[in-house]
Image 1 (cartoon, rainbow, N blue to C red):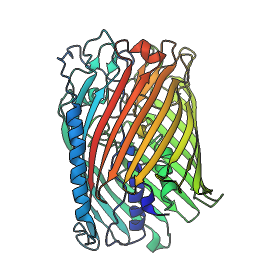
Image 2 (image 1 turned 180 degrees about the horizontal axis):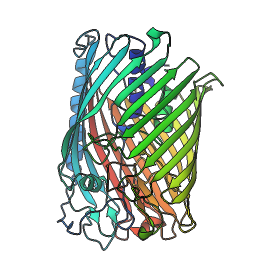
Image 3 (image 1 turned 180 degrees about the vertical axis):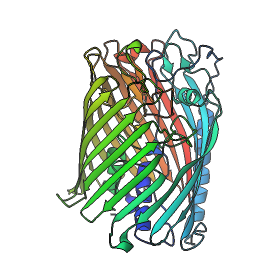
Image 4 (image 1 turned 90 degrees about the vertical axis):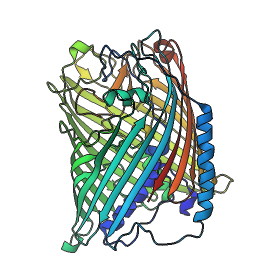
Length: 569
């Protein structure tokens, strides 16, 4: 398969970097190969949340009443798109035929790495009313820069990476009362001490990776320090289409970096991997860091304990074109925060008094089969949870079934996919049982492309069309029909803990007996200008259903758009 035949989202690019790490693990490297995929973050498209002021995990002081400033400008958006495009085509022409060694390879064993991402985001969110701080229409800019140094040797590799995160022009009046956060800008503002332009420099990664092949144990590695964890991406197959599906439809449903935000989540602890031709065994014991909406990502959240292990049967071992994984994940949380569920506020103890102890058992099976002039794919994912949800018994479940077909012989190579996801909800707040599926610490926008929702108490039927007009351009159109699994439970959003205390990390809005959230349609465009430079444009529109019509009385539809550029070396 020609690697340029598929233009991938961000997490697929991460797989390519994983492949680089695999090469490092096997010995010395002289030069990093650059991915052909864009370095847009977290599938590259969009993120948005909302919450109820009654049951949300974010609390602001009573004095939080600010003037409104609406600043969306389509002219600014269009100008930015055209400007990036013109610069991109110029850079593409200059890059043709260039094959010079990388200047970032300082020695045979030492290399600098870097990333630069800039993004403009614009929101026109649902709007409750009447309410205070009811600004649902705003925009802001963000910049994220990373610089790292990698050293390799026969016995151990080391990597250190710093990150700068800056957000400029956040709204100070988009946290409605009642109604909650009206988009991501409100959440960034609330999590960063009500600063309209927060910035921070922090240590993103710093680890040693010990290799045991010289000791007669090939395939065994032990990593210690601060690093990234992406469950479901324990290894890569080398088949670009297969790895694309793993990155975008399997990985990080429960545990990931949440890389779309302007300060990603990392993990402090240890990880061991035993990788063999037929299988992969991975195990990690960690604490997450801050990150996500709280850009002060230096601090470890020591009150959250994570243990993850997975056994993966590699592609083609059990069945042709198929891989399978069994996994276990433990999440313990005793922060000074209140869990979000469908009980009244006075019935929920703080996590520091009665914490979460959630066990998850799960599996996935992914296959890609050549069929006619194209390829068919299918995915089955499922998880069962048990344990303690504060002073309640926790039992929950979720499953996902998907399939697709790509016509490789047709112009644009159209790839049509569809599927159905169901995450359990709780229909009785007074029975002492918590039955809402808990998404732990996911990379949420891989599965919620305009994430005013997540996978908790959710029914999601979706269809997707992907076309590739050229080797460097990818266009995707997605449609989702969204509803609550249980009308008696909350309408949830969020991506897990971002802060050491105060906010839970998930948001909940009361359903009031209504279950239809609505429909979501989005359009995404990605252009790889060179191997190092790419840009992305995205637009989504959400049509509110009976739940949205009842909760957001003043405006029942929502829009989100962004333009982003990425430079990596």
